[in-house]
Length: 165
Image (cartoon, rainbow, N blue to C red; front, side, top):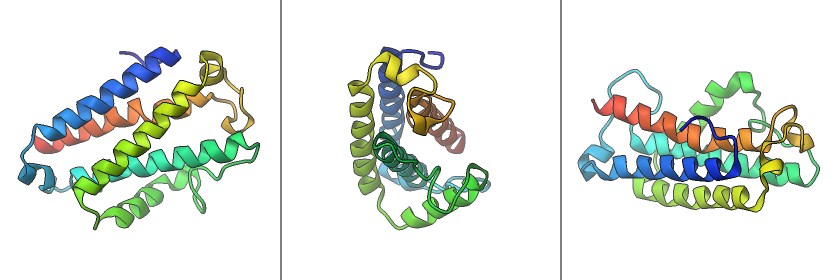
């Protein structure tokens, strides 16, 4: 499916890609799920990839909460700009590197459901009209949600598949 352009497409693709990601992980043995990836990526295993997704979910939830109050969220995170995203991602990696895979999977599922709830409660117009909400700047709420869900899950799927070849 191409990049979502409607609420229905966003819900479907985010759920489909999330399910595909979980199915892929479940297809591996416990040993394979916890195995290190080949050298060359910051995210060294499945846990790292899922922790990355979870933390970006949390940031999206925070942006949404702050933004919908009429305030300006700190994006992508306090002390960071979009140009310092690599450093932010390294901080995320450090924060979660000692958390068990099962805990990360639980947390990711919960944050996924919270984002699904946000998608559900908004109309097509609210999701996809650019500049609808001041805090989203020149883009749409849907664009942020696509980045935090379906396209991010697609990135994770590709990274895990490549590392497991």
